[in-house]
Length: 85
Image (cartoon, rainbow, N blue to C red; front, top):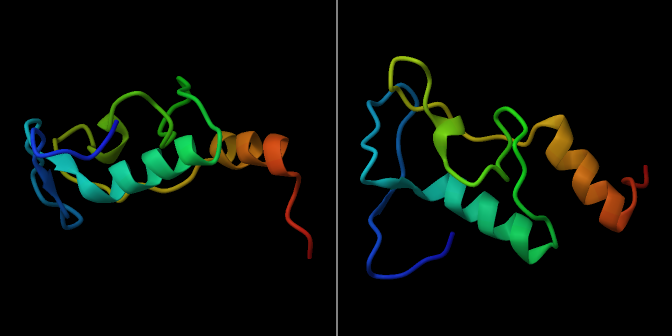
């Protein structure tokens, strides 16, 4: 995923009905940052590194805010090591 003038982005509110033609800005930022840090796509449920932003929509088509899941955290720790206390 990337940013360009051909795509439409929006900052959705929690519970708002999503439009499949308008991409979630927050998810895109998290996803692209993951790529910049060295992560590839995965198929883990609700991961921000899935190839699509379907993880930000519930079964009723309402917006849920993206967040890192355990697989996202573990994958970045595989590259950079665990967080030091």
